[in-house]
Length: 628
Image 1 (cartoon, one colour):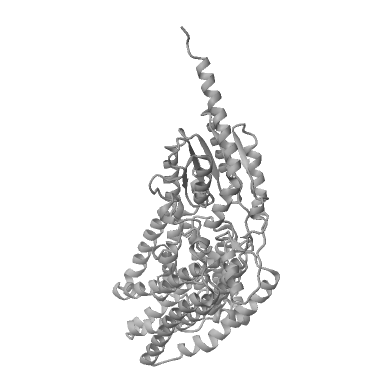
Image 2 (cartoon, one colour):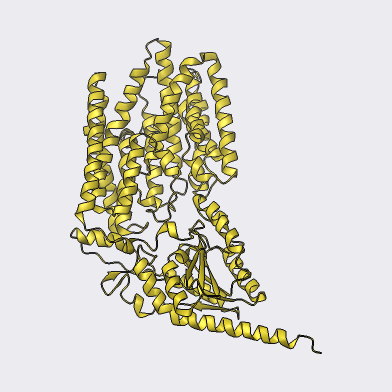
């Protein structure tokens, strides 16, 4: 079979790859390893591009310009059209903060550098990954970057040295990836070109294997069966928590390569089934459109879980958009023969996308009146000790000789202005040391949190250790629904309170404030453009509060303060028609101050108990003093 002959089985394999990715993105529990469909695409891409370049090299008509033009025709038109349309959506629906992040992602996508951009994302308050419309463009960036490297490898290295050279590069990069993964650099490696290059090269090796013209159907069936044995279990055994890609990428990638080289097997003939071939033909557009549709749906609903209506609408919208993209954008551009015409149209699309994102920014600012800063944040980041140490980290009455130490994650950071109100009310200074996703107590299980937050978490824990022994009392606040599922965390919290008791310290653990099913800022924006939406409290926070309260109740030196039933939260996320939440589970500056006013009497009781405890300790020590 010649290398330029259309292989329907490869289109069928593309269909399997894109469907697995879509199923995973719809609901990751349906196909836990469905994301390996991207790796299958990489192997196929390496196989086809290597076959194409070697064929043209052999016939002495290979042209770098022609190669890059064909890749541009294949990828860029539909890609830029997607960006243009998504910019319109972003201008209408995204909050100013979220739009700013979207605009940054567009810039990186236009340079095909979005893999690098998303590998560095770690802002706790950014939309979660499943709400980022351009997140999936990381794989296209990796592919385009690889296309810059492959021709040089294939053209400069003599044919007889290609297989050993590619094998050496593959093994070296696999070792590099695995070492980095073992060093807990999962996020960076996942998006890394160097880590993904072996997947493309496995496809290249498959292309370099001479076609077995006399290979029997029986032998092909064996190779195909072996390929399936490597691929199918990977869909279920490899999960998001796996150390991937690295060595774990080898089974699905080698399995794909085996299928590519056993084109006359019974399974490969089954892959040529007409519906699969059609899905494979539009697989690129399916991949382009399925993710933004899901991301937009989840952004608007504020939850990962789709409604029944969304499950019905999703395939209709996705297939419809993909077909239109394939029929009216992909196909016409791929048929253009004039290089000049091709680049003229591509340049026009690029300019249109730049104009659109600029206009989108203008529309975004003027479509709905922006909220004031004190309603969109819980404090000025540069002034609080959250993930960093700024000054003395003190709030409240700084002239007082009484010091409370407040530790926790962003749910403690949201209480800096709260601490000002409390401290001034009870005449105490409150040192607040916090970090995203991290309860800043010794022994906190940092490996559980996102990679980007671990260093700051460890640094803040070490800083807190300096002040724990001498604090008059300790306050702990956190997003308990995130932490209570960790048995190790609950064990460490229990240990921390016990050790505080030995030091004769009182501990006050604050309940998680009520959490909502959607972001109030988004609801505000949507309602300002004519929609009439409301937000509801969810139930996870109440269950988590109960678990922490139960743990705290076992300690005589600790108490649990839950004010979620107070009048402050009766109309939340509003209070007297003013927004008191900055997102679905954090108070804003206004809410933090009001919460402090409500909590002040309870903190007065807490500080009184500390005085009683200290007085008792002083009395006991004086009784034990030797007399004349």
